[in-house]
Image 1 (cartoon, rainbow, N blue to C red):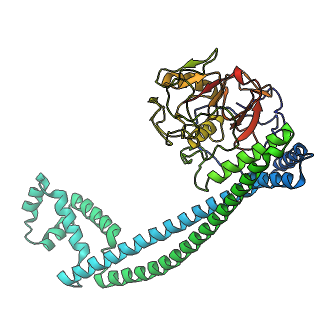
Image 2 (image 1 turned 30 degrees about the horizontal axis):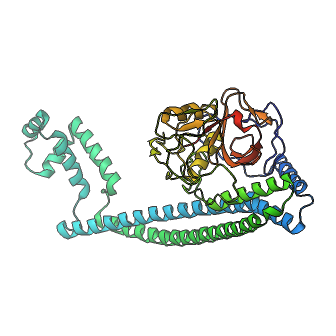
Image 3 (image 1 turned 90 degrees about the vertical axis):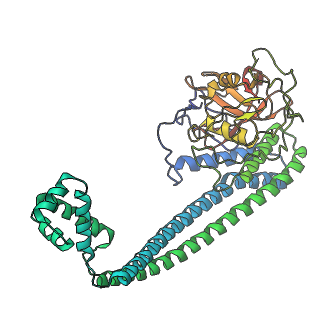
Length: 473
């Protein structure tokens, strides 16, 4: 939850205004509406403040390494997101152009079929055949077939031919209604009141127009597809650049001496890792079901991890913790885990994943926890509840829950609980985050969502890690 009782301490990638507040709830009653893309004065000021804060953290750091961290931060938070947005828009435009071209092609094929059908009718019955009169007669027969009125009309009119039957029916009100219905149906189908020669000419004209339209739309769709491909290539190039810069930074982080500089480097590295994993069409706000299942490398993390993916250990619990009812017991699991995204059963228990992440509201902490756990191939449910309810819901499903942090664990903050002394979780909904690193001093570095943050996700370090509950696997 991001309804603050305190101002969030300054951190890389986000500066939070006290006026921004959001609830980490589960229910979503309205469709997601994209925010305006124009940069506001507040957003600009946040970017300036964030950049200044980053530079202050890197004071005294070798200039080449400091510039590398700043460039990586720019790639992860500005260049790659902008390229992702451009690629997504281009893909949408290409899809719309292709859909329009396909629809016109379908109309063209339908017109060609109409022409072929009419040409066959002309071949069978001649070009002068009266389709309108035949249609009226057929409808009249259908209306009166098998009814008492059919017998009565047959006796009264004593009609022996189609022409007699149609002409004599015009004096009867019911027959008039039938004729009107038939005329309407005939007009809808292909204007049968026109003679066949005129209809054939009209269809041929329609085919010519549709052919020209289809050719133009196909060319437009091809151009849009090429533009989308170019923007996707540009995005992938930036992501590759970010990956290379992150790997270079990882190899030099040991030279950093101050805690602030190390934290700035860690955050920049994590942001770049997440940016390199995502693609332009992987995430639809509010859906949560388009994320990659692989968590990628865990390079840069320290502590908390183990090599086994089984659930056989019985250790790891501390006071206040509780295991769930499944077979998962103890914190003997690796990150990334062994649960493909969307898994309904994993580590010996039901995960609660039934509809992916679509039940979680856009930008909220619950959606981010679902996305990040999926990226790390760890189990996560579709209806875990509000942020503060995740621990209780997880126990009921058989997850292992305790008060000991582990990389990849969902960190649960109860309603009104202090978030590391920085701010207070919403008094109604609570909050949930994901542990990204367990530090040697016992603190944890977390990623989290929420509308009160300037970025999605956001990051911070929590010192009193043992005061919270952790959902493991």
